[in-house]
Amino acid sequence: TYEDWLLTCCYQAYRGRKTQNIPMGDGWWGPGHKPHSEDEKVLPFEVQTSDSEIQDLYDLIDRTRYTEPLENAGFQYGFNSTYLKKVVHYWRHKFDWKNQVAVLNKYPHFKTKIEGLDIHFVRVRPPHREGQRVLPLMLVHGWPGSFYEFYRILPLLTNPRGGLAFEVICPSIPGYGFSEAPHKQGFNSLAAARVFHKLMERLGFSEYYLQGGDWGSLITTNMAQMKPQCVKGLHLNMLTGRTMGFGVLFAVMFGRYLPWLFGFTREDVKRLFGSDGFLERNVYELLRESGYMHIQATKPDTAGCGVNNSPVGLAAYILEKFSTWTDFSNRDLEEGGLERKFTLDDLLTNVMIYWTSGSVVSSMRFYKENIGSNRPDHKAAVHVPTGLAAFPNEIMHVPQVWARDRYRNLYSYSYMPRGGHFAAFEEPLLLADDLRQFVEKVEKSSG
Image (cartoon, rainbow, N blue to C red; front, side):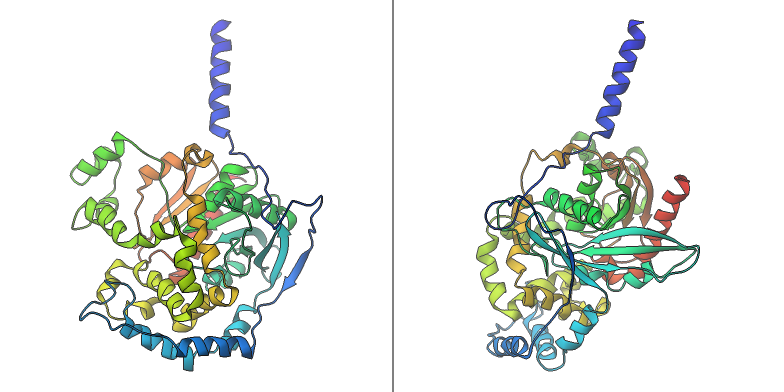
């Protein structure tokens, strides 16, 4: 009948909309024109250093000019130069870069050419045990982090527990660390998502799990939108909601007083509104912390000149984020609370990855490339199984009710008890446990 035909058409249209993928496309980011073929070999890579590289670093450090901080300023004006001198003294006289290079090389590194770029990644296989399940998992970092953020969580994921272990692949985003920087304009998160899908395919994986925070959250989300048939599950520790319009406006105005009306929990109210209200927590705080983003999204090469030529400037620029994004209240401390969650060896190792690779400018360009409207991923929902870990000191809190508008197949949403933006670096055990529980739930549901 006509009614049956109409219902069938409507169902097919709905189903098509629901499962519509953003286009995979293709690209070439190497120098010059795209060749007819590309070398697809996967080659071992080793992080290296030299006495001359270290001596050059020392010479530049020794010529640093400092500006005295304002009295009682803490980190309110940026990295406190009194504490910066202490960090630099440790860097110059106690930090052992050769030892840290050996630490970096304790896991196998590789490079392979994709779309004209040398893509660097770490690949860690679990120890062999009879009867265990081994699932492929890609972990994707953000800015100003690196693959090294995951070194604390790698043994927690690769060591079998409950008969389950992960084979972990940690790539460096092109333009970050040891992945070659794009030579052409336009390399955004969609391009990175496509490159990482090609990487997993080249390594022989047809289905895999994804985990990400910061840019890694957007890149892995794009991967799930692009090839959902390959993504068994998506786990994020930085959440982005797609909800817009009057619904959010009313929730912001009245959600503190009528949380049940907007689907908020008590924890949502606490994290969204705090003691000072929504505007202070989610608008004014972001304005205080987003100056770097406006610079990097407009003129990254200009600001990049300074930090790419001064190791101390680079350290201040990067480490300030590891202070504030761990906890906004760290701004009130002269030492920025940096050593509460991290060691100076770990922090400076991340800085050295940027310094020795000369990648800070190309990493900053990623912000400019991702600014733009009319992107297909902005309107597309995510339909793969998704797990969200909401850390209390993340830069912005996204309630579950808002997250569901974008991530339609939400398997888990966890209010984490502590931790901030750099979850794998700060709280590796918490993140690993939440990720495992999510994967076990997905595996159980899929039989």
